[in-house]
Every structure is written in C-alpha cells, then in structure tokens.
Length: 302
Image (cartoon, rainbow, N blue to C red; front, top):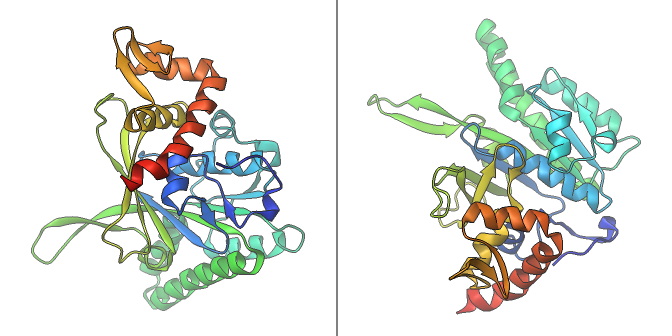
C-alpha cells in the first residue's frame, strides 16, 4: 500500500483505488507511459481523471489538466479532492495551440501527471475544419499524430504519466449495422494501457451507478483485468464502495443478524448505510483498505 512520501522518488503513481493499483502490477500508473480512459458519456472517465489528479497532489505531485471540451468545474473538482489553486489548467482551442502551451509550460515546470480531457474535443474541431477544406485531410492526421508523439515524448523525457480521455461514437457499417468505435482511433492505438469504462449493474445497488473498469495492455489485448465500481454523481467513483465490495470479496465484511459487519463493527443493515458509515469513520475505512491490500495477493493465488 502506498504511504505519503516524495512522489518524485516513485516510479509509479498511485491511483487511489486499491483494486486498480493491484491490477496495474500492484503499483499504479507507470511513469513514461500513455494511458487511455475510454467509454460512453457520463460513465465516470472525467471523474476518475480528477480523482487521480487529487491523489497525485496529496502525494506532492504536480498535475497539468487540459480542459479541451470546456467542462472543467472547479467546485466539482474540489469535491473530488483536487487542490484547484495548485492545478495547472490549460484551455486550448486546437491541437497546435495545446502543443505550444505544453512546450511553454515545460520550460519552467515538470509535471508528474498530464490529463487531457478529452482528445476527441480537440480532434473533432480539426475534423470540422477538414470537412470545410477537403485538402485538410492529411493535415488533420498530421496534427493529431504530432500531438500524440509530443505527449509520449514528454512522458518519456520527464518521467511523467499522460492520461487521455477518449469516447466511443456510433458508426454504421456497410451492412447497415451500428457499432461503437473509438472517437479518436489514433489515441486508442497509441496508448500503452487502456482503461475501458462501461455501465454494469451492481448486485448491491443495481440502480445506483454500477460500472465496470477493464484494464487492457494495448488495444489488441482481448483478455483484460476487470473491477467493479460505483459512480456517485456527487463524489465521483466511490472509494468507499470499492472498499466495501472488496471487503465482501475477501470476507472481511460479512452480513450478520445486525447487518454488514467489519470484524465486530456493525456498519449498517443496507449497502447505503455501510457506505455512509465508512465515510463517517475514516479510521475504519483506512484500516479496511489496508487489510484488503494485504489480503488480495493471498486471495488471488487461491
């Protein structure tokens, strides 16, 4: 389990989610790598990115957030743990401007984490320019490739982590069937690791924002590692729900006559009551997380 320390000494960045860190070789996000977050709208990609930013800041890291689609909300970011006064937020209008902004910023700043939310917002504008100017097709892809090369180059040069948000869009094939494809294929094919987000009802709270995150080692990986999570519209992807679900999986949390219990501690008769208890009792929440981290390797080997 990670403990607060000088993050500059760490070769990996903790995500703040026990199961994600464990599935990422038990450490977190590798420096020098490009990560893609992809999924349908409103599935928690941006929330995950912001929670990741807050986590890295808590460890003393420097975060650059590229607000490409203009949806960044300082108040929502603060609810997710982001120190907005220490967050470097960029508002580019197009890809070339973003490259210029990052180039100027890196003359005086070496970030631990760069978040791009989202790349389709930038590439979409270039696509519209391409439609208006047919001879711009090649320029569109050249600019996109230039940005991806620049981002991966920054990650490798400065040992930073780059996280880029992508989306799916519906397209119709030759037979008239509709299917989902990445909005930005170039990013999808360039990412070292892909975190794919999907809606997935949860057995404890089927109508309360159940999602699944699958982790792929590149876009050709067809056997991903998976985790379940709960998306809270107010507080993002819930670390309390993650602790509860993993606690049940490891039998650290069990249902008894008086409700869901963690050892001798009764947390409540319902899923919602147990989560509320973990929010109110941080000492028990962190103790449960620590036991989960220690218990995962043993459970996975069985």
